[in-house]
Length: 606
Image 1 (tube, rainbow, N blue to C red):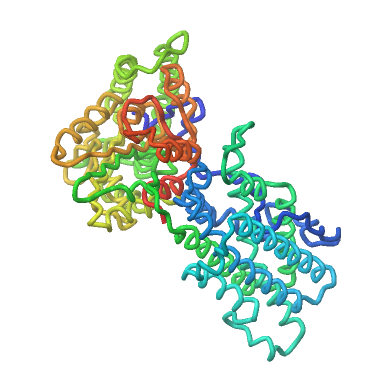
Image 2 (cartoon, rainbow, N blue to C red; image 1 turned 30 degrees about the vertical axis):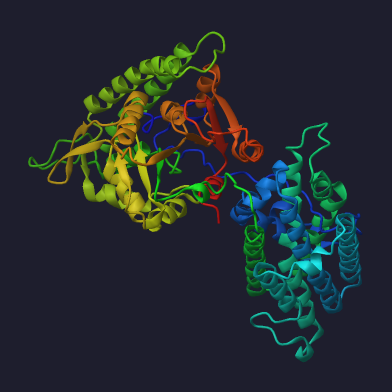
């Protein structure tokens, strides 16, 4: 009955409780890049960015808004191999050659932007940024000399690099929708817009490389000396490059101050387009080595069967479904003094429902926490699936008793199926959830199935929530209301109401699947109720931050590994041939993801 109530001390339920969101909180802007390893001139104190709160700054807002694009770049096969140190040198040389072409365009774009700026401080800042790019080109040349070959001339510009450079130079030349050509600009102010637009197209590149450099740097061992790309990582994670990225963002903020809302929208479109071109640039790098991501890359639809399992409440949704059903019951219930037709199912008044629901919620929360404490071993134990299964049998008994109290209370009597479906259509799902499932269901050649395993009391709510998002090809395993002429009787047909029910359904689905194909199972969940399925799947991914899940899992020997660092480690082992079975269930290792974007990038890629 976790759907109705809280399953952790951080999810104390109230009547219309909103679940805490899984949306990642973006910390301070990510680290800077190799786009220059020299400290940059700092904008004067009069800079607009100096007086604008960071959360309101244009560049910061765009970076947070387009986090998905940065995640897709981070999880690209090229980035994973580079971070792990297993990237083949020929691929890196090709990348350096493409980057040289790009940096030359970057330097020219800065030159054009400087010419358009009418503020001396802005001109100086752009000039310093351009000098940094020229210094970086010198560093690239030193790499080329070390290799003893001219990889730049040997590697022609590929289509992804060409698309990015043409976009950048077109923007810097004023070829932006709604603007005249630079030679025909009527006023100096129109020229300054081009400088702002150009920075809008360049800033995301600086910030993205800064982000990647820092993410990779976190994974370097303190005394690691044999990582072949350590110099690359140190350059992009250095304080000097960080300063460069920050300065570029501050300059964009400064140049954007006098612009109208429509013009700021143009900058946002340019920023977003640049982020998408960065993704294409990273995924275009030719790899001659096997990679563990995207997961579907190594998937052979003719021989393999990809099985995607997911919980629903607070894994896919922002609000717990039981809170939705309770709200429907209370809002549609008769008032205290209202007579009910004899032909209708007798219902409590809205005031009685509100009070009863509150009492049920309080009792559930208190007893749930007591149950969790009672199943924890006094000391941490080594992971053992059977031991964990035995412990969660007690939680399953508790869930069933709590559900019985709900049925006996009568709070679910009289709900109209049409009201439930309307609520499902308006149900807010986690960012990226629908697009992930859409991409799988629309790719018929992928040979993948999606199964939703949920404690939700009403499968119709789940079905409507997904179908309203354009996802119809789902297998939903949940409970169902009992209806009389579309009106709930208050009884429920129970199918999945406990951790034991979930793992039984999970095992049955795998058992029913054809044995002629090699199966790979992925389970995505957020709570203790998902724990058995998470550890039984070949790949278990935890989304969210349930304290009770981590507490129970940790005490029973389960390890929680952040997804990207875990993949980098796997890629390193994969490259060294030390992992004959890349993914293996019941290992006691679960991967944690901060959002559905991370899951999408890992499983499906771009």
